[in-house]
Image (cartoon, rainbow, N blue to C red; front, side, top):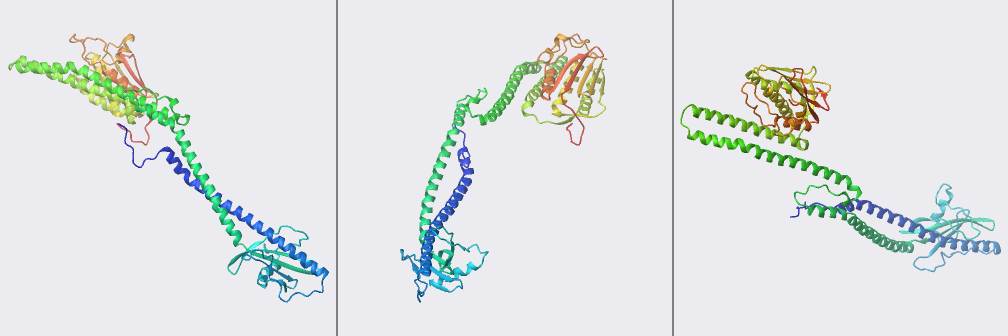
Length: 489
């Protein structure tokens, strides 16, 4: 069935949209702000142009009056409004002479003219237009209403006058609000369309991932072939490569497990059958020497079965270490010294001159201490089997490069057999020099040695020892001297 999904899991497209939501909304808000500022500038410019036109007509009329009718008296109650085309938003004006005395217009605008004396004021506009031209105004407040004001300085006759023209911005503000609503709706529509196109694009890009998913769902449980890279975009090719590497490691691990099960089933069948047969025979025998001899054979067979099971487990662990093993610094001197102490009773029993020679400086390799101990123990055990009574075996640790070496005075290994002896269950037929019977063994000891060495990046070679026997050399590719780390023993 389909694998259950986490209830809080999100698709890749949804996650990307979630990450892009904040930037897109920020851009949308900034765009609206820029549009508002641009529209406001446009509205103010249009209003300034209208007020400038009114100012030009007022100045022209005032100059004509001062030139043609200088004797004409200024009306006692001058008109306060000009071009009252929109009764709800009248255009107000005020003209004052160089002494600041109002001569025409609305006195309420007088406060706007006092600021013209300040030359540093950004609102000062000492402009003398002789023809229509744009003059930049400014916003101010009068009677709780926002007004747009244009101020000009001009000469009429022999006197200088200052003119202020003002009008409420309410009408333009209403137009600005309407325009911004339309602009916001348009930009929101664009944003929604962009979201839709982005969602569609991400979904389209994710189609190869769906094809890859369908390919995996259609696979059988025993199909370990690599994933085809053409099923996915180039951007996730490293993911495909990593997945294929994982499949390869899993396949190696499962292969090692299958081989272990097959080897165990094959090799344990014979000793288990022997145990059963000898147990049944022991039940039928009466008390006496024959029964005691059968009991000894039963114990020996049990030991061989136990040794075989332990070796099979060690072989399986060595085969799977490349994919599942945990590596720690292992001190070779301490490790081999521990192995030498363990096998010393066996050397004494066989009357073998056994010696351990450590390296002058402690060396450490990264690996599994238990498996490395099994490697050294199998090498020494193999040397004990083939070395005649009274012979010699030496276990040594050498440096530069780091090596574990086992020398013996046995018959040695012929060059033609030096590669074959490492195969599982493969043995060179040798007779015991005392009994004349074949030397017992399972054929797994050297196979375990090679598997452990390969799992640690080491090599195993067979040479001729100085005692004309066999010399097994395990050479490690990398080594580091003992440091502040706490290595495993």
